[in-house]
Length: 224
Image 1 (cartoon, rainbow, N blue to C red):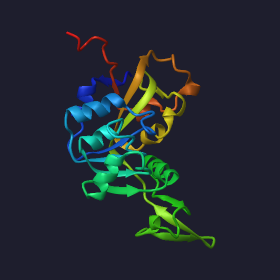
Image 2: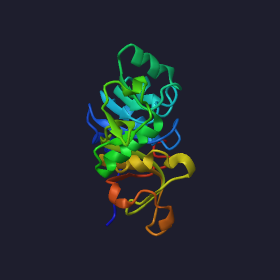
Image 3: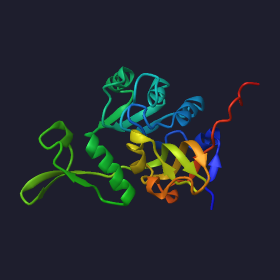
Image 4: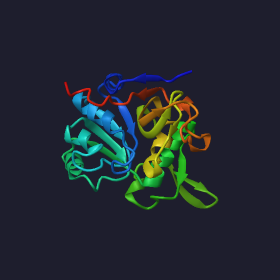
């Protein structure tokens, strides 16, 4: 059964104002750039952005920050984007920042239906404020709750007609975990290939995790 393909415009039309979105990528590597641009074009507001980082000003996820479409940020790093920092300081964006390893494990927990993650990271720091501490064999661990989203926007290298995804080098980063942790998963591949072209060993996200594939942009479509 072929996965349903949609245009970038149709994909973003499914996302309402106020939605929570997971966006893959590390400083814009592995980020679905066309979907980000379309979110800005359609002016989707009040988004909860769950992503490792807001990239740079007006680059990658930074475009959502620049357009002031984000009301809450959940991730692990904001140091590369002064615009994001300023909006957080001014109270325009709520923020929840956690260590990077904890961040991805919370997503993995959300994808696999776990009740949370026990980690010693953050014990004795402000990361632990307001969180439950659990003792295991005499050691203290923070209970970090799972993360899920309404939509996951996944940047992939290849998709086949079924929706199996492969990634190029480090662009798999957070995409693989996020593709398991959202109600609707929309993949934006660099190219779509016939089923069987992607070696089974290279399939990092199986088709059962993907709801929609964004069609490739038609070259010259906007030239006339």
